[in-house]
Amino acid sequence: MRASSNGAAMPGNPFTALLRHQAVRSVLTYGGTNAFARAIGGIITLLYAFKLSPTELGVFAVFMSLVGLADVLADLGVSHAIVRRYFDQDTAEGGARAYLSRVVFTARLLALATFAVVGVVLLLGWDALVSGKVPLWPFLPLVLVLAYVYRSSKLFDAVVRTLDHPRKFAVYRIVQVIALAALSGVLVFWLEMGILGAVLANVLSAIIGAVFRGVSIAGLLPQRVGRLPRGEIGQLLAYGVPLIPRELADWGRTLALRLIVANFLPMAQVGLLFLAASIIAPLGLLITSFEMWFNPVYMRMRTRMAGGGESLLRRLRLIRQMLLAAITPCYLAAILFLPPVVELILPDRYADTLPLLAPYLLASYIALLGQFQARQLLFLKRTATISMISVTTMVLMLAAAPFLILAFGLVGVAWGAPVVNIVGLLLFWRAVSKSEPNELTARDAVLGIALMAVPAIYELLHGAHVQGALDVALRCAYLVFSVGLIVGLWLWPNRTLLARRFWKEV
Image (cartoon, rainbow, N blue to C red; front, side, top):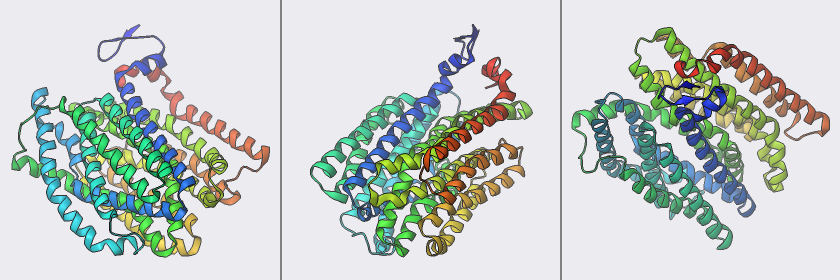
């Protein structure tokens, strides 16, 4: 037996100790909850495919894209700034919590003004945004309502991960997804309200989650502490507003792409694109889950250990190695076996979704690597640099989309995503390397991308369908080979740290 960093006795088995460590439990809680919620959401979307036509699913995709746009424009980067600014406050617990309470109150006041402006913008540009294929009423009001609730969710998530209360986050998300499942069953499948039923199910379940969330957060923060002083509001916005272009860029690379596709192809094709993104979303959410936990931990580590040098870099790289070693096999297994499994489930009218899965999974994995670089820049407060790189990649994606659509159709659009993400990763790499040592080594980045790209290109050339027993054997052999390579290169060299000194190093 040996003691952990918080004084608790740790068993000799490092893997048992790992599961009992508070930080790891937080990761598992955030990740497990998000994976469960997104998995249920993905299942609901798959069930929509049986009830809704590809055209109706395309309308739903455009609606959710506009919700994302309104959410980004109205957030002002506050949800990101909270985590960074919190650790610049008085270390006394009461003072720090009072700061968070003031941020939440101030953010609600800002939302009243920003959403009024966003509503006018969407009203004036509605027909151009939806290519005249989605009616203004009742969808615009529902867009604003859902975006407002989502924005409040971002604030709640920022607070609970800053204060490290993963259980409160978990309960709220589970309540919301259960409400979504129940409302979808009633409105879409029982009452057969079609696309309007799907939209209302998402809006109403988000409101139910918001009410439950409000009760949960009430006990975390002191009440009636007022708003932030103007100087602090200015610093909060000075950190957050430069991130808006980054958020818009993230929206542009994915959600705005649907709006462009709607201009060139029938709405049914937008539905196929949306369905593919929804199917791979549970894996993509692993990135968000890790970030939700690790960002505050990362900021705390670097703030308290300024000038840590090689020792700090070693700890951060060890965490990154463990993350990649856990997630890379999951992505590989998804690329190799998800398309044939989905083929058995989906109706035939959605068969063109299958070739889109592998490139989207590859793009999601590359985005994970980019998060390591973006996190370093966030700590250095180089938010403008992050936004510039993000906007550059968004412009590349949106500019290339019409040519890819005309030349290769939806498959071309899907393969454009990983190519653009590689460009973004290289730009992030250069920006970080000019400031400090990179936590992500070039060797590990190249290895991870190569392992993912091989099966994705194989499916591009030979199709996503499993072609007999030999094909299955080759896929299994490649997965086993890749896992062995990952263990040998990423985990085995760190075996002493992981088995004996993990708790001191991390």
